[in-house]
Length: 565
Image 1 (cartoon, rainbow, N blue to C red):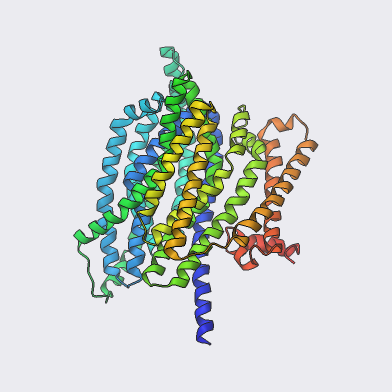
Image 2: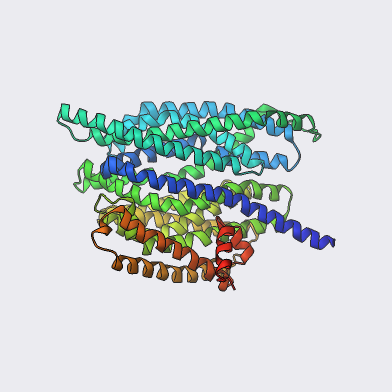
């Protein structure tokens, strides 16, 4: 075989492996978010918008402590493992795993203690005092997640995303079942307390706490899965350590130092990047209080935002999954000084992310009403529908900013996303104050401020990537053609939705069955139209479509009906 042909084939194979690994996590992320949507329907029916407000507020605080303690562990560990595997240092990989587990014990334990004893203070600060029960319930989960983050990062660093994908699905299934059951039981307990004390908030507060019990149960299940998997791989790992001929053994002191300096920039950048939710929660609660709104009204508004985020998180999950597979892959390319592979990884990740995010934003816009009414049928969803339509653009910017953050981390410019996140957060806070206190835009002010935050991150990250990697963004096949295809897709989906809606009896449309009859065909048509147009307009090749989540099955279906030409 010609050496040039061989190298080209090898590059294509590596690119295909990268997309496949990203697709595995992306599919798992989509499945997890769909399960999340499904169980949030009965959960929301149980605890209502007020309970959902306590639930969402508790998770905002929990997420910040999770970020500060262990959220960065998968990225940091996978980055360290992949860099050493590229040099054949199996002994150091084993030592990194041990050191990271010790590190997780310390930081996870501290975060759990802070959340447990600080629950009352956090709840008062965000003007939802009844969220304290959910906060305390989440405290043990942080400790479990620290260990889980280390084990996920270890296997991601070895180049396989399958264990993480399987564990995420197991975690969410257990989470769904336990959350709904526990919420129902504790809501009943809260109702009894309400009757005894002449109150009305305990049922919502304890119901929300029940919903968070499932998070801990799911995390524990995933952790037990990894314990079994790690134990089963123990003999193989010890054999690789014995065969290590790299001649380099890092001290544990050195490993802890490297782990710390790897974790800290990720913690700070992720903390600032994600703390906007807690900042929003605090500023919104304080601002609405000054404007004369009651605590239960503030919780209800925040509950609507939580419902919007449920839709928003599904397409963003694809970018999160892509980032998880991108960082170790990009780290290996940088370690091997392979410029071509590095640029290919950057281009593929940005393009793949936008191919999913753009149609998702269009879909949320045109199908907001039927989708919201399907998920939350028992309530008046007027505000949620408007919020979803107004905030759909956030899907694109958050997806892109997530991937570009990962690119900069993979390029070893760990401090750059920190600076960008600080700048974006300052602009975000200023925008939120203006929208809320001057224009009196209520919960819409949070959504618009979030769009501005993500947009600023995208612009700053894009400029930095171009400078550090000497990367030039291609726009036609990455942005312009997918947007055109998504526009036609949206028109087709909306047409199907309105057509079916007009044909069905009005009485049927008041229930979930009627909404499902409207939503599922509309989504199916949207996927088919978008896939066909992508190939017809040459925005993607058929082989690229196969690399996307569910792409091979979709290509077979389209070829069966001769839609790809």
